[in-house]
Length: 99
Image (cartoon, rainbow, N blue to C red):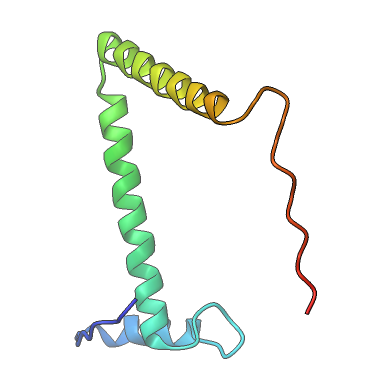
């Protein structure tokens, strides 16, 4: 995926801490990688909080309806898979071609 550019100004102490996390053999080899990782983590936590708030705020009626939709979707998926393949039969795995 193409990368965009961003210029930010941050507190010197925070910058020094960021620089200590960068290592040639670690998960973050550059400042950009460390900031991108931190943003991804923050976004994931935001999404988790939104999901938790949604499901935590549900009443019993809404939770029961969600469960019914989940079961219906799973049933439809399994039915479509059963219709594709004869019972007890799966396609044979293809052997890699030799060159």
